[in-house]
Amino acid sequence: MPMTQAKRVVRSDLWLNPVFDARLAQEQDISLGVFPVRGNPAAAWDMLAGAHVYHVSAAKDELPQEWFATGELIARCPRLFCVSSSGAGYDTVDVPACTAAGIAVVNQAGGNADSVAEHTLAMLLSLAGPLSLAGVDPRARTLLNAMHVSAAIVIVALIVILRAENLGGTPQPVKPVARLAAQPG
Image 1 (tube, rainbow, N blue to C red):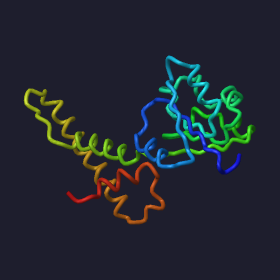
Image 2: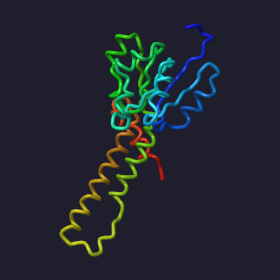
Image 3: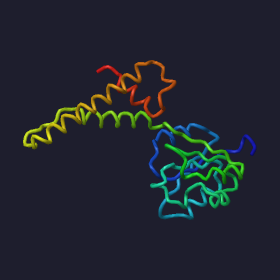
Image 4: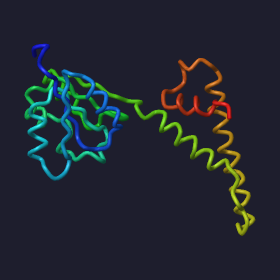
């Protein structure tokens, strides 16, 4: 492919942070096509047939199987040289089929790590926060109080993990939660 030829990135209309499209729009030699996952397969196949890069959702429960990056899809995309999976994993990508066709596979994991960390911490804090126990059976109060203590212990553990300052050994999914939990205030 000559360097002057525009590169065509194609993705489905499943939700993706708008910054993805905005960032690609800044590049003069990249065009973006967004196809509907439901309702118009002919339009989708027209876009995919000219794609150099297919940015596919890793969410196998959201993306119809027709749009998984399989050998069948690859056969209909003669210009494809990269499949880019967004999200945690690449369940919607047949890596051996891509490899056999000489197509690079990349994964954009961690793009929503901060949002997941915020959500996780909010859920933990909701368990640790005070509940109105009026009208609750006295036997259930003991259990609910124990749940508050357990959630508080988890939060403290996350803070300790972060404050160790050496995040090299911390499992990747824990880092954003621990970082957020350790912030003052």
